[in-house]
Image (tube, rainbow, N blue to C red):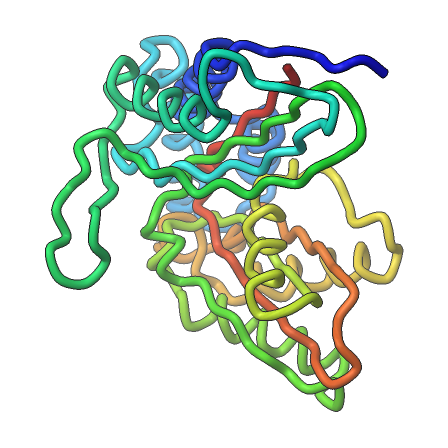
Length: 283
């Protein structure tokens, strides 16, 4: 396979479009889940909230304005083909330019501060992004982009469980994390779960899990069954839409796994509001 050359401007333009689109247009999977939830929600107030969310999303799409005022911190999962060369710039610079342009031209709220503790001065363009890159075979670049809001991000957690905790320990930690979050992450939520790897790998898996369409299941039947079991348990907690009570606290639970060390069982839970902003493209 020959080397393929891609201009940095193409990467920047693609990233810009992904972040504008994911903030303006709700995913079809979420729309479908919200419509189903209106039918099954037992609380009249909950039904009303869900109906308002659907209407809000329609308005955002038709007027091309953000679904929510929190347009998120830019997170990207990149599968970078080993036969690709970027011309007229670097890949990372192109991604940052794409994010910068999206949040400027798309009138998206700029929420990133340069120092996390002391200065906390807004960078003014929502950069830098958080970029996870995996080198793969081929001559293409696959980009999965998500704008992660922090009302839900702040409710996330990681636990370094020992193997003796077993399946029940994993499920207990996930449910406890959601229970502690309560109404704060703007339910109905999407719960991303990462199990395995190391401390940071579990968190990365959980974040990527929130970007997976909720109408898909884990390929392993055991984890697919756990997704269903956890979703049912979460919806019995009663927080409901907007935390005002009801039977729709979560729209989906997505689990991703990775091999881990014999002495450990890392588990991460990344909670996402219903907006679940994400879009993908292949260059």
